[in-house]
Image (cartoon, rainbow, N blue to C red; front, side, top):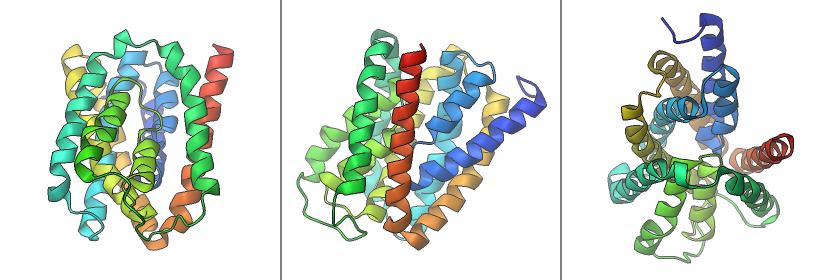
Length: 254
């Protein structure tokens, strides 16, 4: 039924559930699923491709959950999502041209900076703040840069979108979380469209993980909407720090 042993596939589904929950609140679900897929025996390209499949369903579920609750208007976000999808696909296409070692050196510092921003910055609540960048400029600069990064590397994409919406677009924490999910879904879907022709996707395992991610994302989004910044902010700090530490460990042990 699965491409791997059933017991291993079930463990991957559990990992996807946890990742969907974390990702729907603060981003960083790939911190859980990417290592899990690698440990299950997937090659790097199979890991990226299958992770994009399950991640698309998780982020898509979170986007719909926030939209149903009125925290985001998906129709108004479609142009920005289209930019994200194209950039995500482009990032996946050029992945083999980017030195992975260089990214692994840069990323820990960036993620620690994000964690510090959300941990130390005063006044980060669910209330909107001053807009520092017009929506069109944000859509044509920040969005494609982050989405392209998601296509060729991935960890921390949700955190980067969150930082952009809070620091530049002036969104409150909950509103930023809600708006992040459609863009993350679009960049995942764009990258997945590039990976599908390569035959690298584990479809059966990915489908099982996708179902689990949907459940985790729905639960996480519901909890985030109930608690707001009091949950999102600390979880974002924890996930960003954890991703940074893992990347440092990989760089040292590699």
